[in-house]
Amino acid sequence: MPLSEHEQRMLDQIENALYADDPKFASTVQKTAGLGSGRRRLQAIALFLVGLALLVGGIVAGVTISGFPILSLIGFLVMFGAGLLALRGGSGKPSLTVVDGGKGGKAKVAPSPRSFAERMEERYNRRFTEE
Image 1: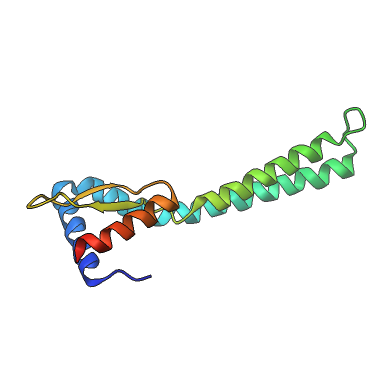
Image 2: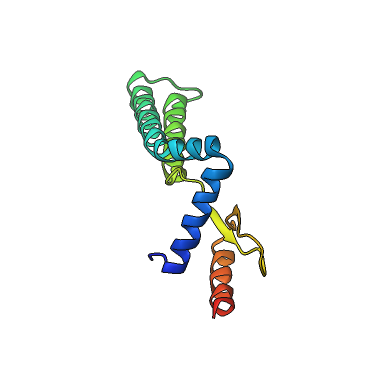
């Protein structure tokens, strides 16, 4: 869902204020925002391939402990971890929310709420306060 004109203006104001207040931090966030997802995706793919090699290699080599293919189990766990890494990777951009500073106050930037329900409740409340 695209941002409304008011939300886009607020976001631009916050971005300009961030660049004015702390340009070094702003450039660091801007640089790392695009790199995170691609790098994490490559790491997950490489880890998945290592896990697949361990899984197949454990079956072929026949390495067992008490009849249990332990090397294959380790390979499966590595593959599972790679899948979690890929899913958890996200966009790599920090999520920020605009918090209204009240009457005459400046808008502040705060970390976004953690749960989906909290974000929906915040959006619902914001609709009635803006009108």
